[in-house]
Image (cartoon, rainbow, N blue to C red):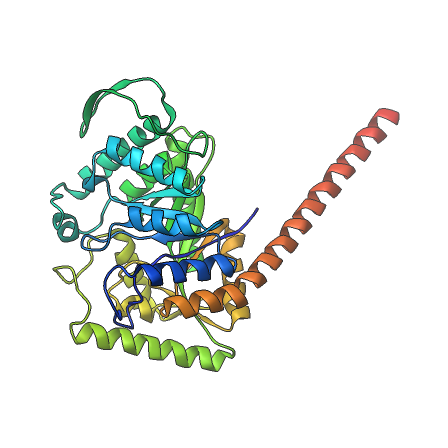
Length: 383
């Protein structure tokens, strides 16, 4: 199966290790980072969402209008706009990008962060709202006649959009989470299910949970699986590990000095972050290259487990996940621009070459099995 690479579309040069050098929205840097991804083999970039951050939709439109190939993954929280409005925004952006949009729906795993923009629903209520929201957006994208909706969270009458996506029948929907509610919602509605990087065995367990949820929802297909990591690469293993320890030191220094804004409360509320912290507590190193101190240092905040090593080591680690059925690999370094270029130059080509080789071997095996079956049939008929 094809493999795709997802990077980050940041609107400034700040990260967990480095303060930003200018304003929250630096359009020159946004474009420079996007071009670095497009020029170095990446397939798409994520425009993330934060309560006080620049609006990702116009930022994505700006980038898409300046680039030719790079696809956009747009993060969106259902609490910030009505689904009729959002569906038109997404369709317009798909038009601007000539059909390069995927929408990532975020339910929200932290009550305080949700409350910053007036969202007071409980976690379970938010998941129910997200499922309803996604279904409405999908219907608006694909329905050319006015319709009414009477749901638990949304009601409207006689609505029809006058703008439709380039992609037919619609853009893909992306979703993530590690709770029962997340598996249920994403298993039912997502085209792509997103996981944070965990050890191989735990990732395999989560993939099976997603498949089971999709089957329980009556689907005959299953979502594609995306897994996210923080790569730390260098020319030698020794240099890579030195870089990894410097990175954790910088993360801790910024947090301890109060330079990183925290949510209220100490323990994370979302299941994904809880899982990352539990994995980190159980051990620092897993499998070929997975390293957990970066997750521990951030309090399990988001995509935070690292893959450490030479480009060859990190590429082989990513291929281990590909062999589990992961076909979208998300990677974001701590030096956003430099790491995007290095990863694109030194890791992506190795993974793509190996995937092509493995796919060719599988195809040859299938062809051989088909030929053998045909021979057996002919022998039985002529025998």
